[in-house]
Length: 192
Length: 192
DNA sequence: ATAGAATCGGAGAGCTCTCTCCGTTTGTCC
DNA sequence: GGACAAACGGAGAGAGCTCTCCGATTCTAT
Image (cartoon, rainbow over the protein chains, first blue to last red):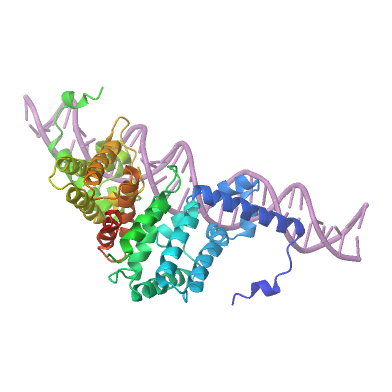
């Protein structure tokens, strides 16, 4: 199961070029327009017929995954790298702020993180859980050293993260999400 | 302009009953399913043909407005009533929390507040601005007495309010938004 | 009871979106 | 350069949505 890439022959040169171009354009389109953009529109912007794009990505979801999955994976990897950091509070708040910052500039990433699970991942993928788990570990450590209020659970922190991204909804001045993250982090900190 | 209600004759008894029923069902449907529910689906749930519902409400928007506008207006009225309250900090935080609480149980209200302006109001309506203005006044007063950090602008507080409602997205345990409001209010408070 | 107006019902026009199918074009290998 | 597989293009099927139209039905006033 799922071993099709081993028997697949290499793509023709033009096909590989076109595939790259589709990914490039899709990335830009998703960043500026979010998950609601249509497949047809991406094909149009890339200058291909819709059939061509479907040849490379069998569904709209597959294309969106190809563009976005790596981004989320990087967040998870960052969290893992911080799992043994010296200052657990700093690690948690730093990661939280950084995720908000990175996502803020990308409408699709905001949509995806915000809606809990706007993009249905390939069945079997545990990325959603991985993200929550990584967040949960940073949170727990920060709580253990007394940097974060003890009454927050993982879901709370996840919700607060999603909440920050709301500020980045279409139009409006930039940087709203980062301002929100600052306030929200203050709220999560243990009080003096 | 807009004087049709003075010349309109009263509705037939059955029509009035049906109109009430549509409003009732639409209210329930919007509360549980949010703004994405289709007009056809509301007609189906109410047990009417779609033409009948359109007879009472000329567009989907008009129906949604009829259900939701009053709710928002009440928020604005509450804010105005608090504009001269003794304790400006308490007034601001209390109103903020109350709006979140009220909206939390109503998916459509969340969608509407959250998306900045998901429901395009009748041109000429200033409800959106009224809401922001009322919020801004409560905020400014609370800042003047030192209860809220001085570096927040109206837009920030509005974004934070919208952010709290994200927690109420479909499924998931109830009360997330209220927990978030607590954390967020702590974040907005001036630090000791 | 009956005429006539008010109201209802739902098929379907017209739009958008995802995805398929297959005739046409293009790259590759000899 | 020619043969053949690979890749492209875009019309259109099928589904869902908003909203219209008008024949069928129901209420009301007399």
